[in-house]
Length: 208
Image (cartoon, rainbow, N blue to C red; front, side, top):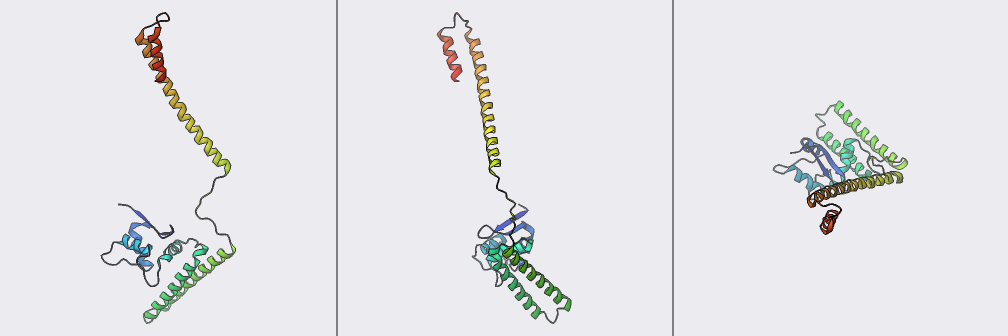
C-alpha cells in the first residue's frame, strides 16, 4: 500500500521514519521483537503509548533518542540522560553476552566490542561537552522571515487579490456590454422613439 512509515513517540518525537520493509528489523535490532500472531504496527503503537513494556533494557521514553543515535543526530541536552541509560544498558548487555559466550568468543570479537563501547562513550562525552559549552545548531532548517519579507508577501497577496477582482469586473462589464447590445437590437428604437421601454431595458442591463 505504501513504501515509508513514520512512528511518533509522545511529544511528537520521531521513533522511526523509513521503509516499511525495515521497520521490524530496526525495532528487533534495539531489542523490541514482534511477538507471534501480533500485528506489528499495533504492537509498536502500544509500546510508544506506554501500554506495553518493550523489554527490561528498553523503555518507550528512550525510543526517540535511540532513533537519533541510530541516524547520528545530536541529542538535545534535556534528553542526554536517556542516552546515558542506553549506554549503560548497552554496556550491561554486552557484558552479559560476553559472560555467556566467553568460551566461544575470540579475542578479536572482544576487542571489537570494546572498541565500539569506547566510541559510544566518547560520543556521549562529546555530546555532553557540546551541550554544556557550545550552542546547539538548529537542525530544523526553519527561518522566520523578517518584517520586510513578510510585508512583501502581504503586498503580493493583496496584488493577486486585486488582479482577481479586476478580472471579475472586466468580465462583468463585458457581459453588460453584450447584454446592452442585444437589448438595443431587440428594441429597435432610435433617439426619437426611445421612450419608457428603452429606459426599462437600460435599467435591466445595468443591474444585471
